[in-house]
Image (cartoon, rainbow, N blue to C red; front, top):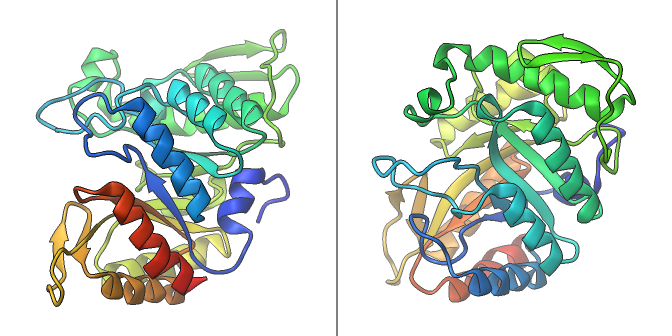
Length: 306
C-alpha cells in the first residue's frame, strides 16, 4: 500500500483477504428519497455486524430513463451525515463524476469529509455515463477523458502542496491560493472506476486501486491478470448486486450487475474471488427485508470467510 494511506484505505486493504462494503441506499428505493432515519439505523447496524465500508453514488441529476437516483442526496452532504452517525467504518464514493464537478470543489469537499470522519474517506472517481447530463453542465462528452486526467492532477496537487502553481483546462493556480483543510494524509486514495476513458497503464500509475463492476469470472480473471501486470499489489475492488434466493435449492440467476442465489453459493463465489485476487466487494444488497439480508450476509459470509 502507498505510504500515505488514510484510515479508510487501511480498513479496506491493510489485511489480507476479501473485505466487504455496502452500497446506499440500504432501504428499498434508488428512485425516490429514502427514509433517512432508517438508512442511518441500517448503516449503524452494518457497522456493528462487521462490514468494512459504506459507499454512496454521485448522481447529479435524475434521469428517469436511466432509472437510478442513487441515495438521491448529494454525496458530500450524505457522507457528512453518515460520518456523524458511525464511528470506524470506511466511507466511500462509487463514484464522484469528475468531469461534471470542478476539481477544486471536489478537493475541498472531500478533504472536509476526510477530516470530519477522522480519515475514513476513500474516493471512487469516474467520468460519467448519463448522456443528458453533459449538455446540462455544458461539458463536451468527448473531453471527458482529458478532464478526468486534469482533475486527478489538480486533486493530488492541491491536497499536498501549500500554494500550488498549475495550469489546466479547469483554470490557473498562480501560487497565491491554498486549499484548506488538507486531508488527514498527503493525498486521498483515488480509485478510478471502470476504464474512465483511460488506458490501464495510466490507471495503474495514477490510481491507488481500480474499481470495476460485476463481470463473468473468465473476464474478471483476465482483467485481474492485466491489472497485476500493470499495478503490482495495488488493490482491485468490484461492485455487484446480491440478492438471497427465497427458496431452498433455487438455481443462481443473474440480476442487474449481480446474482440472486442461496447464501452457500455466494460463500463459494466470494471464496473464488478471494483466490483470484479481488480485494474488496461493494455489495448492493437486494430483497424485501434488508435487515434480515444484512444479518444473513454477516452469518453466512462475513463470519464464514473471516
